[in-house]
View (cartoon, rainbow, N blue to C red):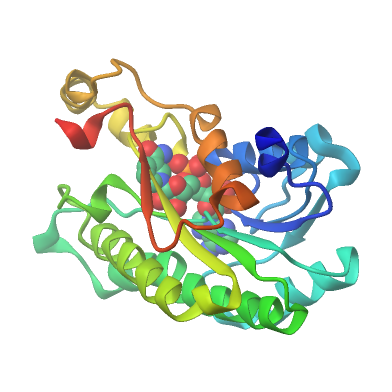
Length: 250
Ligand code: NAP
């Protein structure tokens, strides 16, 4: 049955940035689809844990440094015995005129959005290869994987790079049955866009360009996330799927 291919029964997923926003939505969707989820967050994912009960386990870790990676993978394996899916969702954005941008503004974003993503992905892929049954990696990209944006140079650099690295890793690891793909959300109503949404002029500009006529929600991303985590996407490799209410088509 085709719908069975979308199920995640028996699968174990790591989702970073599990306390809020899009990451919280992905955790909820995965548990509903039958997976056990390890949520990684720098603050406790209390609300997510209350929502999801036994299907969810929280690892507290600051992904601004790669030092935490062995513990994230180790705690996942000791809690649930394996790992099948990784969603690199945690991300930060720094909005400042490029002419004023500091090295700290650059590194703070690149470390979380790109460096840790790469090395966490590498660590999880090593487990996939050891386990022998393939696996699924989903990176969270952005409209700024395709476009320049304004006042967000490190964010655009990180998200453009994520789209490229998604293709590189897919090329190298498809032979192990590992699917590496990304989702590029459009403009979604989360903490990430709070500053934009509270700026009347910018907010109206953005909204007028979205064919769907509204900001996206965490629920809007859930179908794409479950698809890319499930065997329904076994022949999808290195692709970045936009969930954007039509933004890129304009
Ligand atoms: P969000 O509500 O700000 O969520 C970001 C998540 O990343 C939070 O859980 C945050 O934890 C976590 N995080 C940030 N730095 C971390 C660190 N050093 N260690 C551990 N966790 C860290 O925004 P969101 O919209 O859900 O963002 C999720 C992803 O979607 C991000 O990669 C973002 O770039 C991407 N995205 C969002 C949009 C949008 O319109 N919202 C569009 C395109 C792409 P804290 O709560 O502790 O900060």
